[in-house]
Image (cartoon, rainbow, N blue to C red; front, side, top):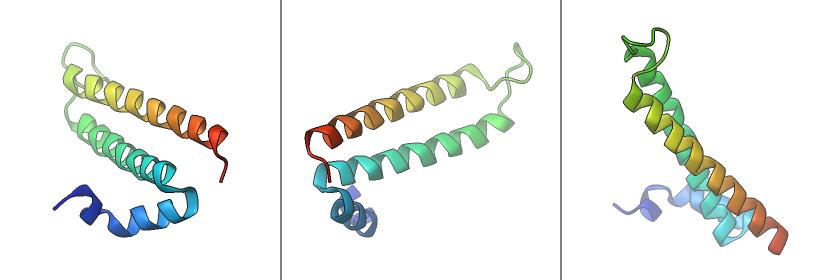
Length: 86
């Protein structure tokens, strides 16, 4: 099943409110945010032995990459908003 089929209703709602590109970016941002939450929950159980209280290095790296992706999507949405306000 394609991403467009899986998230059809959400895409339709956001694209109607924001336009095609911004609507898709908003759904992507929601998916990344949900992924951050899931990885964060996993990080609670996978603690570093070297650095108590911190998640394992691989979890920390995944969280950092997801956060970077989120910032890039947010930046692109802002750029699109300035080019063509809805």
